Length: 334
Image (cartoon, rainbow, N blue to C red):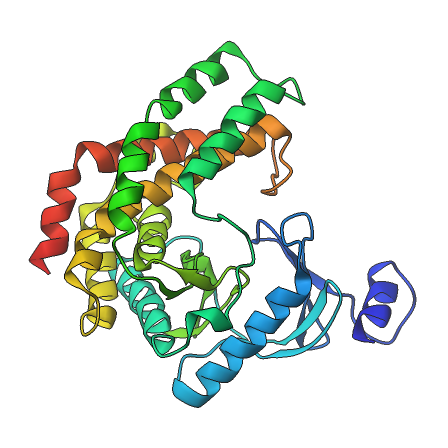
């Protein structure tokens, strides 16, 4: 199988091929460019059922081939946790270079949702149970604090956790309101880094479909606001940089609504900003939980990186909450 020789080359055995080139942007799986293909090792600490992930991907792949011009890397073969994909030469970005790039990204993810409107929800299985269940994430944080298995709870961290946990009631209310929306197949990880761009910075393909499954449209919209609307990075240590750019917020919203405007329902539209708050808050406490537990979910490259991610994301949540009317007006002005 393809992974046998790959493993030999990766561990230094002599072959006639160049060594694999690791791609280090991903936070979960391990990925390499190798012999003109993309090789990926699934993180089984996160994805317990590898077969479901691959079965979902083949179904999504086949559906797009029949019904859409949306491109994803073709899954060529799999063996356990190893997968070989078509490699698509392209450029990727961690942040939009300008408003137009944010528009293109949001438009692409909106069209991705649209491509699966006619796909029965039961064809795609859940790959991570309760992935965007804030109540479950709050329970996980509370449990991490109680266990404190890595002895990382300081007075400062406890204070920050207590502040975040005060938002439980609001998140519960938002959750109940948003459940009035219908479920659709959505991407679940709509960072700009999951768009492949061509040399002219036009969207070429969408990647990272491991968590694509039934959910709500505001999950994807919210993650775009979370990951693209501020100048600061996800792990920004200069907290003052975590400030929503009104122009970027508008570009994301215009791009998304341009793609989904023909079918999105009024209640879905009215839930977009609530969904953004929900997703930003949920991600913030996931980062804090992972920091307390010893960085077992999200990869880190430096000390306290997940703690910094929590602080940055929680700051963004508070800004969205405090300026709710301002951003809601933008959504309904488009």
